[in-house]
Length: 299
Image (tube, rainbow, N blue to C red):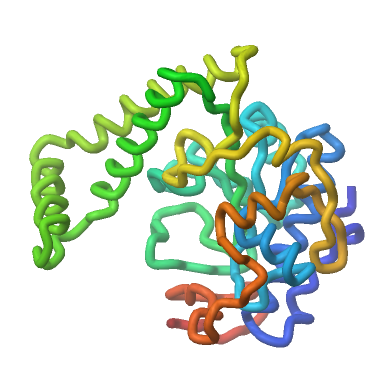
């Protein structure tokens, strides 16, 4: 398959660095959509990408990322099958394909552009690729009945707090009780390694719940994957059946009741944020195309 003929790289057509990044991500999305239709894999636009599709019919003008979601089984199948099908210039980045790529609580799968550099403050300099990317998140089933629902929610709250402590890498001013507590837990972790041990134990418990819920015939909700810090739940009818929405110059799959989902996440999402908040997260280092002479941008 000639990917460059089907979905040519148009980054050079962008009028500024932000738009060039968006064009790289748009090409990625088109390729992922193509593969998903070919492999019968379900996905849908999520978060700011979904908001952009509804409010702007494309990227939010100041947005520099792209998010999609896949049900757990499709997410795992995509990871197993997509790497060898992607064009040569894209890389499927997971912990297996790039051991240095690991961020507890955050995205565990990215599609990376090999011909760019986008280093952010949380980037691991040892990661194999650091290019412009799109995120792919898993969606899991969550129990609606008690006590299973309470147990799953408790697990996720504990995990989110573990991730917060994990992020507390260096000692910070102890001006509040929260800061002093985090500093104490970070100190204990340096002595005992209890956070990493707890994260490993959580991964075991989460995997058991994922498999249990996948096999269950009971009523369930759909939410952000167990390995993510975001705790959001949606009814099945809010997601399915999927519909298509225009995003830039193409159509992609989106949740059926996208209005309800966006209101849960953003409130009155049609109201634009204040002008001061309309800006992308500036990367520490940005190179749009390493194949051509360019000036490295630093924030």
